[in-house]
Image 1 (cartoon, chains in turn purple, red):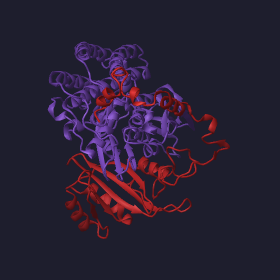
Image 2 (cartoon, rainbow over the protein chains, first blue to last red):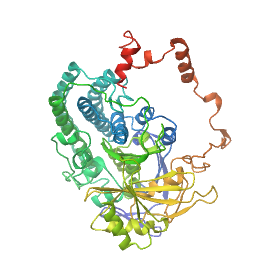
Image 3 (cartoon, rainbow over the protein chains, first blue to last red):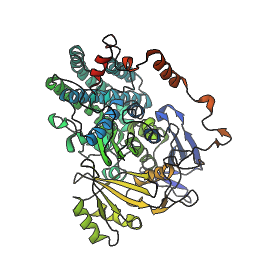
Image 4 (cartoon, one colour):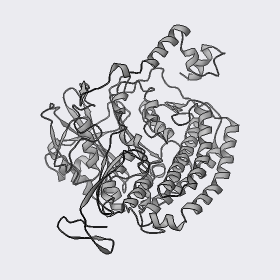
Length: 387
Length: 208
C-alpha cells in the first residue's frame, strides 16, 4: 500500500521509498479489453503507481427498471436476460422465484431439477469466461481457447433447450419453457465426466504457473472487513475467507437436498482475499457445480415442467425482497406490487454494481498492470452494472 | 424478529417512531418504517447492535408515490442470518428543491454508490455524501427517470433524444402483420413443434 501526500517528495510503495513525480491522469476505457465491456476508469498515476481510480459508469444504461414498470410480469423476463448476459439463466431464475413466491405458485419437481441443472451449467459457463479472459488479461492466451471450447458445449445444449445461445427466456414463471430429454441428460453426464479432468489440467496450466502467481498473489487484497463494508457477495466475499453461500445458508428452491461444499480463500499463494484467491475460489466452485449436477442427474424425476399459472398474472399488493446466488454474487429483486398487471417498482440489487465500488478502495498503491489484474479478478459484467 | 427490532430502536434511538408495516396480503415481506430525521442514528444502532449485527447494506432504493417518496434500506446480517427492509418517507420535493436526508456512507461504504444511484434515479438529496454526483445518467442530465411523472428531455447537448427516425417500428409492424395474416397468433407463438396439432395443443402446452 502506498500513501500519497501532496507535499512530500517521496512516496512509499510496499517497503520501498520512491521519488514522487507529477500526477498523470489516464483514462482506462471506455473501450479497453481489460474492462470487459464499456467501463471508464479515470486513473491518476504517480509514474507507474496508481494514486486514485474513479469509475465512470452508465455507458450501457438502459433504465431496465423503468421498462419493467410498463411490462406485464411475463414480459420482464427477456429484459432480465440482458442484465448479466453471461449468466442469463441465473438472472431469470431469480426473477421467476420472486414472482412465484408472491403468487404462491407451486413449481413441479422436475422443473426444479431442470432449473438447478441449467443454473449450475450456467455457473460453469460463466466462470469459464472469467477463466479465459482473466488469462488474456494477464498475457496467457492459450487457456482462453480451451475454456471457450468447453463453454461452447454448454451453450449448444442451451441452444437446443431454449432456441438461443445467450439470452434464453427459458425459465418462466411457474416452471421452464421446454422439457429436457434423456439424450440431453446423457450429454450433460458425459460433459461432467470429461470436463472434471480437463479443469484439473487448466488449473495446473494457469493457476500453478509461476508467472501467473507472481501477477496475482498479494495483489488487490480485499479483507473480510472491507468485503462486508462494501457489501461484497459471491466469490469475492468467499475469497476473503467468509464461508457464506446463499445456497447453503438460506436455501431456496431445492438446494437443501444437495451435498456440496463452500470453497473459501485461504491465502494459499499469498494473502487471504488477493486476486489469486478469487481466481481459485471460482475454479473450486466449478468442481462443486459438477458435484451438484451429478446429484441432479441421479435425482431427476419424471413429470410436467410447467405449473399452474393464471393466464394474466396479477401479483397481490405487497412487497418482497428475494436474493439468489448467481455466478457473480448475490442478485436481489425488490418487487413492489399494487395488485395490477405490471410491477409498481422492480429494483434490482446487482452484485457487479456493488463490486465496482470496491475498485477505488483497492486501487491506491497498485501498479497500472496490477489494476488490470484487479479489475479482471472482480469479474464484472457491465450489462449488470448499468442495467 | 420485527417486534424485537422495534423494541430495540425505541430503547436506543428515541424519537425515531418505528412502525411495523405488515404485508398487505398474506404473502410478502414485513418492513419497519422509521422517521427520516433519525435514519443515521437508526442505521448506526442496527449495525453496532450485538443482537442483530446488520453488517451489510444490500441496497438503497426509492419508490415514487403520488404523495411521498419511500426510501427502502435493505440490510442483511451475515453473522445472524437476518434480513430487514427499513423504510422511511420523504416529501416528493421538486426539481430545484429536492428533499434532504442524511447520508449513511459513514456507516457502510456500500452506501456510496447506492445513494448516488438513488439520487440519479429518484431525486433525493443525501446530505453529507462525500462524492455526490449522478452515476448512471450523464452528469448534466435533466430530471430523475424513475419518478412516475418523468418526461424525457427533448434535447441533450443539442442532440435530439429519441428521434422518430431511430425508433424501431419493425417489431410492431411484425406483430400487426402476424395478427392480420394468421388471425390467431397463438397458433404459432407457443411452439413450432406443435404447430400441426392446432391451437388446442398449443394452449395445453402453455399450461394455463
